[in-house]
View (tube, rainbow, N blue to C red):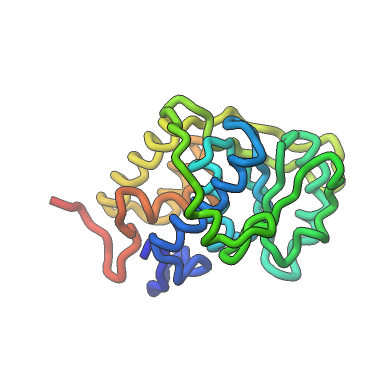
Length: 229
């Protein structure tokens, strides 16, 4: 399992999602997006950190879309983030917005201008995950194609705030993850991994999501990490 409950692990919020389930969710999201949008389209991901966000993010990668995360806070603490969503929509100009099925209708989005799709472990855009996953076919994404872009919100109440960082290609993501993977093998602490990711341009939610599935192994073990032979 890419995400499991380990003592002290910083990824417990995504516990219980197997590789097979992550792949199924990603294929479903990719199948739905591919039927609506051309490859290279920016897609805003409005999620709390967890399994739904993981499936949506990898689904964008599967479909050749550019994933732009907009992380929400924990329940009861996401009001400020929702207020800033309208600003993010204007800055990012997404072709679609993906969010969890329990809150998509409440998002302050002009549904006449931007498609809003719920995407969780059951349905994507109203269609069953199992049905969509079976329909998906690889799109032949190349290493130089855009895959991820970080949106940095401005201060609360600043309607002109927020900025977009340069687009990461699939090759860029693989390069940064290789550095993080090597650091893990050498026993780097969590704050050191976060510093490496930040310097390279990966936001917290993304590097925590990607690193555990890099090369098919969990990097946070129950025992201390040390140099590998």
